[in-house]
Length: 203
Image (tube, rainbow, N blue to C red; front, side, top):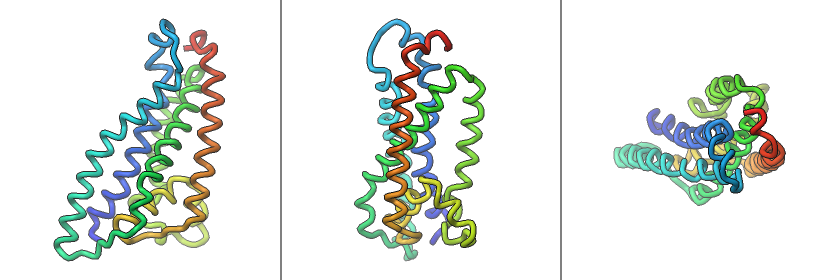
């Protein structure tokens, strides 16, 4: 595959997840003034950040499609397949996982402010633990399970497989990502609802 297409495919999907996580993780700190004056469902703020992130994703996705079309017209081995139909599901998984992790971090940062700095570094570090700038097949067999344990790995690989016809697509791995995402999101919602009851005392 042409390298620009390969890299752009992974980065486009990863950026949406990272944006959702970073935006959600600042929910309590950025909206403390509003939360202290008006009551409304607090989860509306991080959810709105996830939805608004789709605008930026759409722009990057359009650029990715344009670059892919160019290389396809030039005769490269880019072969989209039926897996592109899973794109809405992949977007839901990326947004839900970013939201779940983000609201967990947001709940913890009401007491531990420095955690926000660690999260920004952690997101960048996690990027290298996800097959974005390298294919999963390049990872040695004895370490592949470590990368596969990252729920974003299956999402990125499926996204790349659908639009480029390269990479690995395993239903089991995608189901694993969905299960982990549901658990993280549920844990995040429970912790978020618990924290919002008295967060004004700690923010």
